[in-house]
Length: 151
Image 1 (cartoon, one colour):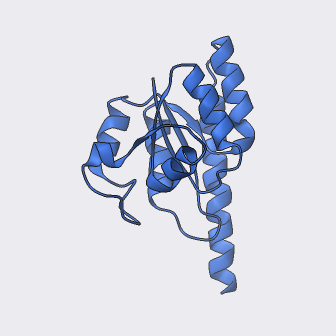
Image 2 (cartoon, rainbow, N blue to C red; image 1 turned 30 degrees about the vertical axis):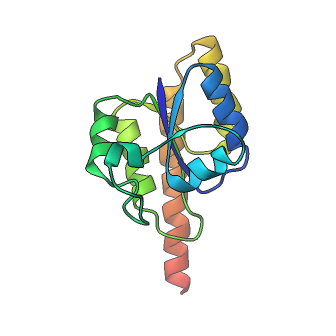
Image 3 (cartoon, helix red, strand yellow; image 1 turned 60 degrees about the horizontal axis):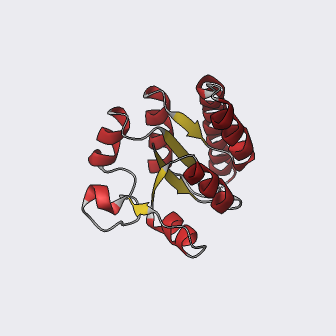
């Protein structure tokens, strides 16, 4: 099993990833997320191992090899949260691709324990998480819209 992780808010991520690894997940992460985890003693693979290019801002999660693997179900889980203060294109695309491919999609750190409990019990919570993912995207778009209106 494999999880793709790209998060701006890394609070609680290390504990979540350790639990995923206990269940046998192999973790692929963007550079910033990988560095955060490695600094805490957690060995992960970088997305650049898939893309063959060094990660650069605005390219790291938009590479066609990443989406090819999402749609081929190379990953079982996508963990993504978006920048609070910037328009995020790659993260939004990953969330939508994960839902379209019927993967486990986790956008909120508040759902980490829920996901671990579901994996432990064998309960399928994809539909619940897909609804939460689209609610998350809608909330993010509303914030961006309000910022644009008020600027």
